[in-house]
Image 1 (cartoon, rainbow, N blue to C red):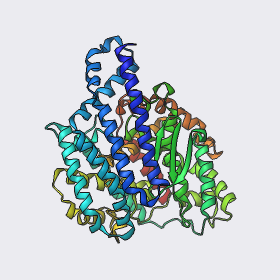
Image 2: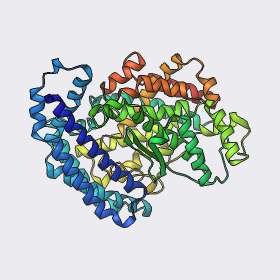
Image 3: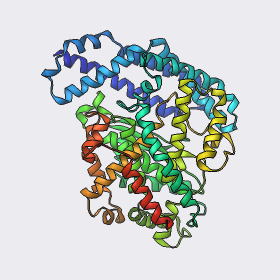
Image 4: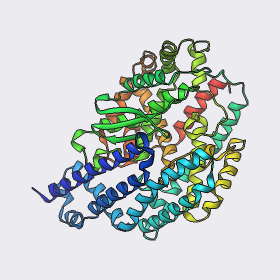
Length: 491
């Protein structure tokens, strides 16, 4: 056994334990008894203490010092890159801080859920203030004199900075606001109306998951308030949700989460439980879920097939054929909820959160002023007022989980998806004909081969650059949105 072999054995054991910890989170969101919250907080904290101890094991530093990267192949050097980055970050965060954050964010989830259900911001602000204080402390430790928010971003999108993202988002925002306003000034397509059985929705969601390549022998679908994907390798689980009056919510939530899940299922098995055995970043991850959901799932071609499936499942949909169905799927309307937003308005929701959380971490915005700041920004970008906290500052789970730096990756993923879609169209010239027949295999196969199988082998931006053929930028996304919705709304 070499030094490198010893280190990788340690990493694989740590990776396996991290998957166990992730399963606790899945359980909490899906089937955990309501009264188990405090116990689960202690369990999560204990697991985090074990993981932190393993990630800061002094042997890792000794192993890294003893290994000569010149003697390793490309995959091993990539493992070293990830391990060193993770080790350096873990060493900067005191164990008691890591444990305190794990305990607090587990407890705060239930506080957020209660506050959201009761539309009671005041009940959540004290625990959010605790989270922000601990995250500032963590950010300062990680930044080592630099920008704490930039340090937080590295957990989700290594190699990026708030300044880089801010410049990209500043280029997106005015054109998105203008496109939104222009579309909403035009006559709106007829919406889908009626009542739709939840059990039938779940049956359809399972069929859609299979069409988009989800391997049910290594996964399952459950329901959750805030849908998510969890796990990697041979145990990748997704959740969705149903609405009696909006079956599109279930269908497209499922397709979105399948994008995440198939990424994890497609990573090379040899990478299992190692740093290369997971999606390389949340931005790249989101590129998969968004291209599945939007450029593929909401396309004219695919919705023609979906129209037939939904008609068979639910009967007459009250729409005048596939073209009216396509328009209903892509219909713009005023709304509060990010996860339910159309393609044009979705990123405006993300940019709002990105700016607010940066201000929270820097101290430019106090937790007590967060709701007012949210409501002011929402009115400026969307043109109407937030009606209640569950439709505003309380709608997302991320801040209660301490996930500062995460939101930006949603829009970055959309930017990446725009680039990938442009290249996918070149690679699969008859893509529309295939999708109209309900065949996504060529599209998902191209994404599997060019993005998903690599896991963490390349840096995030390099993954997209290799697949796209040049450095990613916001141009393809804006061009796609303006062309699609310009045609839909006769602009």
